[in-house]
Amino acid sequence: MLIPHREPGVEEAALPWDYQRIIAAVRQAAGPVMAREVGEVVGVDVSVKSKLEPLRSKLVRLVDRGWLRKLPDGRFTTRL
Image 1 (cartoon, helix red, strand yellow):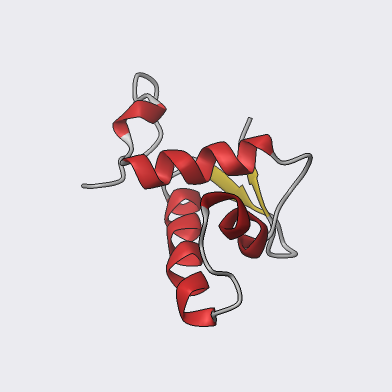
Image 2: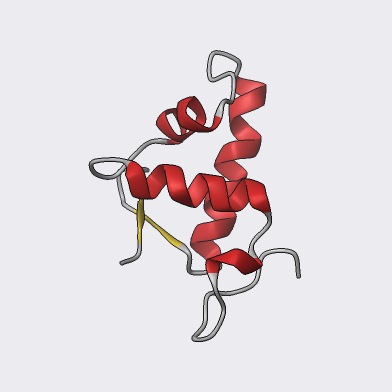
C-alpha cells in the first residue's frame, strides 16, 4: 500500500514525498483549507480543473487513511 493507514508507530516519513508536502501545506495554514489553497502552496496550477482534481484525490486519500480530516464544508485540516 503506497499510503499507509495512520497508526501508532507509522510516521509521516513513511508517506511519499508529495503526500508529505500536502500534509505540511495543510498544517501551515492558519485554519482549515480548500484544495485550491493547498494547490497554491505545493505549486499546482489551480486555474486548470484537471490539474486540481488529482490533488483533491490525494487529499481525500489522506483523509481515508487517517492523516487528515475533511470538514462538512469540504475544507481539510490536520487531525491533531
